[in-house]
Length: 283
Image (cartoon, rainbow, N blue to C red; front, top):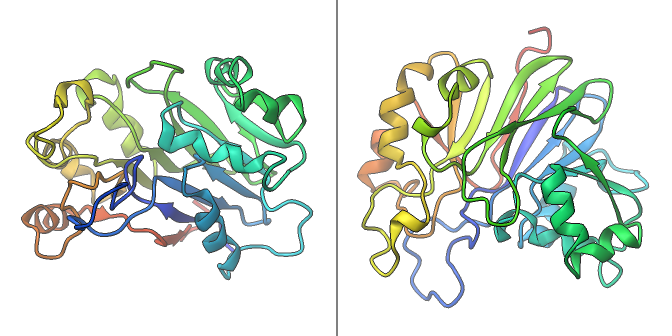
């Protein structure tokens, strides 16, 4: 079986609809998360969202999931300390799954944040998770799969932010980059996207006026239109998939112009449950 990934969540941190909404303005989505399953059966989670219980249920019911395991995961990788990306870690604690010694791959700064703040600290102190720094060394999941952290510019109130380069026997197969402030602020952005076969990238907003009650400058993300303009020439070689889509963003709605614009430029829009397998295991 080839290495595969399952998009467990394609939404921004609050999902869609968000708490208290009665009208769905965009396709229903849970918060951003990804499961990677190696050819030899290792399973690793990229980000632990607030929707993790239902997302892991989807993972466990997938025909790709290798059953008969002692623990349901071989590791968790966290991009940064914004609520949609790590709040699900609480489900690993003694009040819930009570896992034992699952590797938590994250930066030194993120691990320090967890160790210094309850109830997160109990997850490490009680042995439910084991912190493994990824600042200077890739996470080795098994003989087939390694995951390297790439620093990216983002709002870093509590920890730094990384993207993950998922490598299959050394080949850069998948880039997972759900959050970035601005493409122009990341030197080498185009080169990183281009060297991967597949890239899931930040598509939080399509326009600056989606949230009239919020100051958009305080929640910086590149607009989908900017992403299309910058990287449409890469879509012939790299499969570019738009993810981390805010509840205000009509991207993915079949009648929305931005959906047609993305498709015409060769981009794909992520959805919860999207599954992609590595097509060429000898690449």
